[in-house]
Length: 289
Image (cartoon, rainbow, N blue to C red; front, side, top):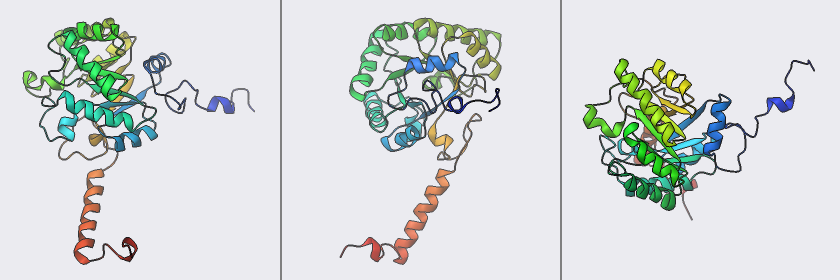
């Protein structure tokens, strides 16, 4: 073997890596911190039920987010604002039951933490005790730092979320890109450093100019998770229905669709309906005698 060629052992994934590594336990915040140190990029997808969460877990996705995006994707709401704690607990518990390895992060929905750090603690505890999640996510930078600090002090791992914060859709007047212009960029950097100082183990950067997201990623010791933040963040997250082509109509610019499941399911439903109309289903092999 050439001295410069990797050995078979070197070709195999290290037990420490997020892909192909240890599979007999859940991914932890320590695993994500170590990935940042070795510059290993990782993916996160949303999940809202046991079935699809199990598929993503088997595919090796290391982190699954039970997002309040369920309001848009599954519950028929126009925004994430109406989603309740009871709904988040139910959805999160299903995702936990459907998985074995992925870290499960659950959103604290609108109105469940903005009142006070004590309210944030009470509802984060529900997600951990009743649903069994490994971490929670909440929106806001400097304004949420005290709540993050209290949760972390109590032993709750927190993923922060800055930039475009969908729960503030009415205040923002939609979903505009955040961090454009010197003042806005400086505020985003302050928000990022504030959540890191408060103890967040990672931070989502949503709808942020790629150059600014790269700057934040370079300055932070904790992993950054981009969604519309360009290619230089430590990780990427997408809403699974966007990623898999289930979403009807336009999707955000930052989405890449890896399948067209909406068309596949539509074709299957039409074929089933035609078989029922024609009498082809159920056939003899689908019947009991």
